[in-house]
Amino acid sequence: MVSVEDTSPAPTVTGEALVGQKIFLSGVGAGGAAVRFTLGSDDVGTGACANCHGKNGRGGDGPMITWSMLGSKAKMEGMPKYVYSTPDQVIAAFTRGVRPDGTKLTDSMPRFTFSADESAGIIAYLKALQ
Image 1 (cartoon, helix red, strand yellow):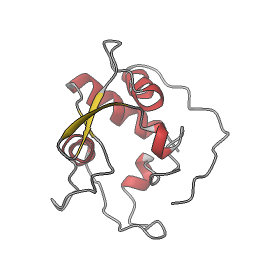
Image 2 (cartoon, rainbow, N blue to C red):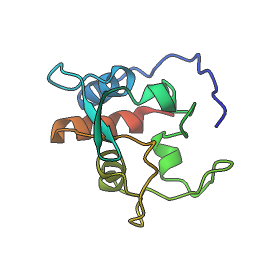
Image 3 (cartoon, rainbow, N blue to C red):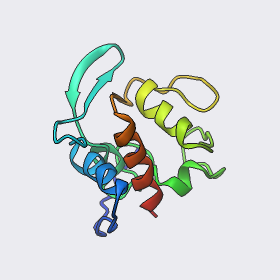
């Protein structure tokens, strides 16, 4: 995928979306510790969603993951399209690496370990991304 530099500022958010923004942009969870992830079956470390999906979720090395795009039937060039219609489906992709139809995402998509508050924060932040 072609990396596109996004120079627009991150959205201004409040409440639980602040937790999601911190995770998305810096990989730091609600308690101030780095959010852990695995690739495949090996614990490989920490990281931020923005490293692959861009600071505004518009794509980069990974696909666009704004809330409107996740729920859209539109397809990105070269990418299979799965419509994520519930927050639980999105969290399953981030934590278990599964699409809404149950098929597995590639191992290049990390499997994050989120608390319930962090999961809610990520969803709130994705909804703030345009």
